[in-house]
Length: 127
Ligand code: SF4
Image (tube, rainbow, N blue to C red; front, top):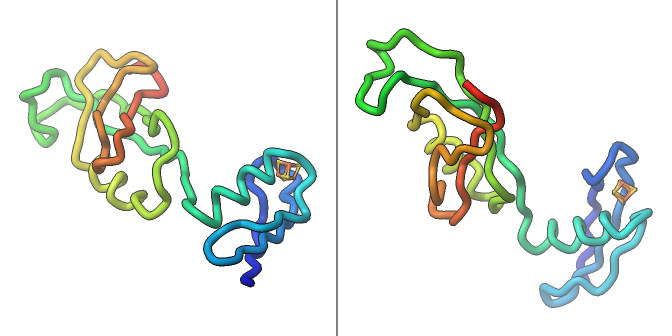
């Protein structure tokens, strides 16, 4: 049996959680103070997932080249849901290669199926 020690990221209490794993299956979770920690620990040891946040350039039209543009303020973006932790660098690479076209509204989809995850990148502010 293998035991993994985790710090729960579900709230600022940061409970220390021990997860016992046998043959790739979670057999016990200890140290959590609530169900959120239990869920987090079970998912974290098998397939860790994260929301990714970043920002993208905003251009005046889709054919504009970033180097020739009078820039609008960058717009903050995030993944619409969690993506696998081991895909974060691919997600960031794709975000850095894209841009939005003004005007941008909160919730607009900036990028579909980022890095093949099936998850969209959405704007988190207006621009
Ligand atoms: S287990 Fe519950 S109380 Fe503890 S850090 Fe996680 S969310 Fe917070």
